[in-house]
Image (cartoon, rainbow, N blue to C red; front, top):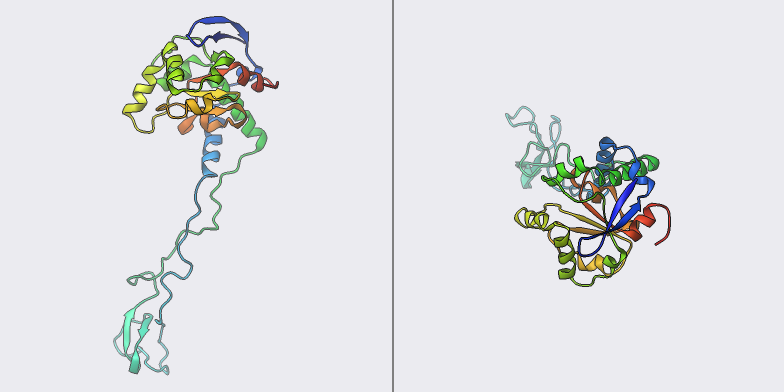
Length: 249
């Protein structure tokens, strides 16, 4: 599969051979499962204090022979607080009582992470990468038709950019500022993804609205398909493609 290498000013430099990963079959079902699995690993276990609602003197006194029994006295057979001289306090402890324990509270030991087979996950990752070269999927996610070649591949000098305004200039040359404007209007909106082999651009592009940047070694399915929807517009550097192809930077 052939691709186009762009310069920092948006001009075509040459045609390049893309790694075989871009020929991977498009499996949106696997991509969705992988994203949900990744996100589940970030969930915070939760549960109440183990003695919540039961740290009270309330007890059930229903036996006829008990001191202070409620049997045959027209009083609800519920755990009442213990008061001096055998008097009855408020009903406590049970779920139906005010400030009583919960019937079925969340359990912190509950398994909330959705595991995924390693080979299956790697296949999902390859499929998510292949989606970045599918014009139909990318255009549907962007909400507009991107006119350039997909996937977007930039020369390695892009990794050496140190200032945010320099990265913005490159995005402007690639006609991607519209995605940034959309991200400014919608809080949390996801625009372009930058995948680099390393360098100062990882920090320089970090604060651009809607733009995420990640080192290729740390690339995950959730980066390529936020919200389980594949086809995110992704900018790769030559070094990043070399790593995806099994080579070194």
